[in-house]
Image (cartoon, rainbow over all chains, first blue to last red; front, side, top):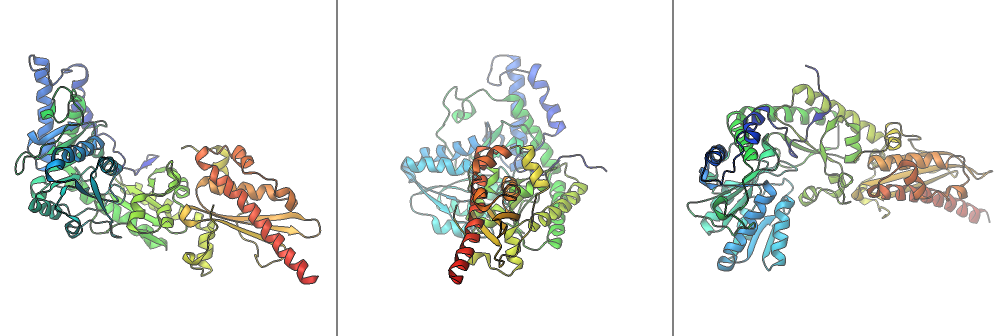
Length: 407
Length: 134
């Protein structure tokens, strides 16, 4: 099979929508266009029926009840609603202390920072080198006034999986609301909110082959019944927690995508895990100075984050320009700081600058992975020939002892 | 972010990659930047001591495509110039030539620093040599 260029290996950023999802959505644009909140006519009922089916499909994927799904515009909104909504609802009664971690997504960190300005206290757990937050770490940070723990299920940059069921049990014992941003986890590996003791869970349609602009927040209704203070006020949609006309087409797509994942994710996970391992073993067998970031055995199967010593990430992306990946290098962002996620692991700024993230997906082929591994090896070799750091390394100079001129 | 054609050209076909003998009297070496900042440039010049002209220049750079292009261009530009003429190369000239966007201006600054640092190293060697013979 021939390879179609460019190759897409950035599935942690977004995924291509599955054609079967588009088919499910199509009737709801022009033909079945009703507002699902219109309770008095057939157009509304038709839309509501579709939204309710989608609710069941998404609930089924995460082991929830359909009534516990609140539609949002995506995980950023879901995280905002979960964190601010729980803090505002329970802060006055229970306390104003929140626990999260340094390598969370900005959509978790920034709501926490806003709450800090409003008088809440936030503990940012410092992840270990392997990136995994354990129940033990959370336990040590819990205080009398801890009201909320918010920790992602799987990390978006390195793919590591936190000890969510263990943390869920701990929070349940301590009567603390537990939110998890499961954006990278949902539809990739089987999860169950009951077994994991999760009270609030964020998910986003476009991360699992659904459309962009739609997501959901799972809000537990029993043991305990979790209530949230809304951040968008209006018509009282979604049990009053998220007003605004429902994005019916988007919701239908997210539901269809969830149903496909439910059916296919086990096979996908095995296939992509094997391809990811092949990518890593091919690269590490041909290059020295390569480090795979994050716990090897506690990762989502389709994600690989690799640092290539003595080579800068953005220039490496140029060397493999027909392959779309992302880098922890500062040069790929507007700021000059390298990835704060990698920095938080303590791997050093130089290796953070030297990292690439490979995100495999449903359409990724073995040929694409073989080609990618080959191009990465060639690119790293080319750039090392150009690298003064590699030259110094070969001369036996310990780079950590060099006094660098600031600029 | 899309790269300018000239950046891509220098990246694909970097000019004057390599190293000169840093122990030689005729060679000045500049190493600027830091790995933690994401770029390190090493630029070397070889000077004809009779004419004061830069006869050869080499570079090695750890950094993004714009950093590699800036240092590659710098080696092209210093060749044939006297050391004092080479000091006249400004980072803004590099920005203009390579059409660098604002976020990449620091790459050009680093390249200018690398030229200055290499020339300073060469001059220091000769100041010492002059002192030694005096």
